[in-house]
Image 1 (cartoon, one colour):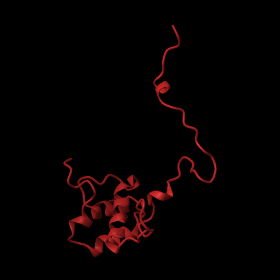
Image 2 (cartoon, rainbow, N blue to C red):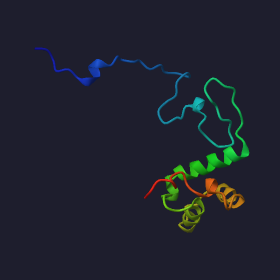
Image 3 (cartoon, rainbow, N blue to C red):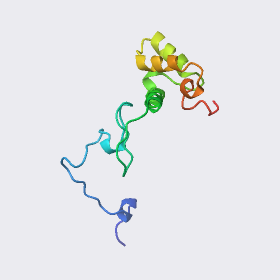
Image 4 (cartoon, helix red, strand yellow):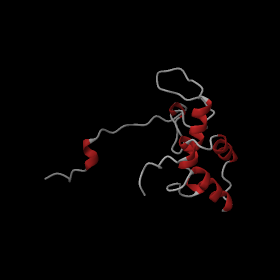
Amino acid sequence: MGRKRLITDSYPVVKRREGSAGHSKGELAPELGLGRPEEQHVIAGEEPQPLSVDEAEMELLRQFDLAWQYGPCTGITRLQRWHRAEQMGLEPPQEVWQVLQTHPGDPRFQCSLWHLYPL
């Protein structure tokens, strides 16, 4: 009887190229269009298009929702979360507060990404 088979035996070995073509661990792939909201958004196979003002503001708010250093965001509005983070000395981005002040009654801007999910 031979050696015990491992799950990795059923997958082919893939050699990674090193150098300028690839990126190392911890780096985000630039072709994914990740980064600051005012940067251009890239969709595969299309020309890069700048984000509209509303899209850039929504992306900024999404990034704020995903930044856990400002505390949890479920069950409260973005403005409440921003004020709580400020009171705790966490220095939330001033741009987020400005966006929230320009759209006071719009739930798209005031509610976090997870406002539709029950607690």
